[in-house]
Image 1 (cartoon, helix red, strand yellow):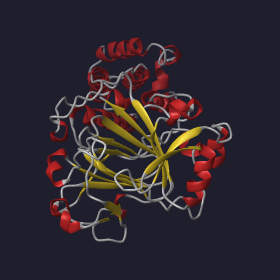
Image 2: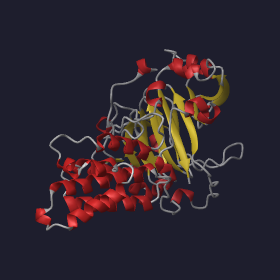
Image 3: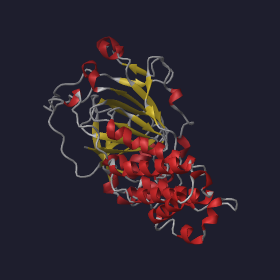
Image 4: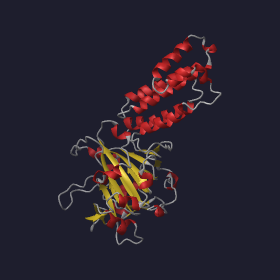
Length: 412
């Protein structure tokens, strides 16, 4: 699979028209954590620990003595109290610099302990972390740790965004710590983890489930990869889409971790797309699905009743999103021949077209004039390591522009 990876691509490769809006983005993060640590915040804590006691010989904090420095990691609050007491015994202009440094690093140590104890992505622990950092900045000026405090606050903005807003959010490098980022690029590894590729998987054969001739077929993973992933000229399109592969093969689940964002509580409002629809089943835990396919595999324009974190582990994928308010311009399907409602799926037949003016081509555009007139969409090319938050009810279209392996996480 690695020999079919495209050159690095960014948002500038696909966003050209002046009326188009890019997805909201976060600053790239490139953590290098212990793969065994599953929690994003524990990963960040480990990064901070690596520099916490890295004091150079000139650092004034050494003048505080060995005893308080030895307690920094295990009893940071007590060290903060000690440092504050020492600071308050002096006129501020005459406070020995070592006690300000001790309060600064004790505050950082306490933040690390808070990040390690995170059990959900609610706002209470965020409040405490922000309070500790601001106290340290105000009291000491944070001369040595300002960059680290800024990094923590920047990461917290991701949580606040999802917890407060209902717009898409693109997070670069959010899953860079997943072992899957490396191991899933190797077909041999995937076959080894599936009993030599003998495990059965459902494969969608045909352009997409909205096209005639589309069908599903059970195949061994070895057959699927040989026929559709590794083949230079497959006879048709084959997509292992929306399959709970990671619960079927737990060895692969060890290569990923559930994003903390899946435990947030986005605003409780029903978008236009979900009004009048049956209430989505309450999920006790995030629902995981894997998406593996060659270049050209597509998920037609549709919306889902759950919030979604879509994580790109291997390859590149184009995505376009439209807000729920545009639903009347999406030409949703009605009831199909089998009596199944397809109201969450658009009848617009679209494809990614990198050389085109609009990045997509639409079949029979004269039949979907309202859709073609919409200019308030958002789009991006997801690269390995990227994650995309898709709020419930937002219309979205995906197309693989290289061989691609992704994981989606649904939650209420």
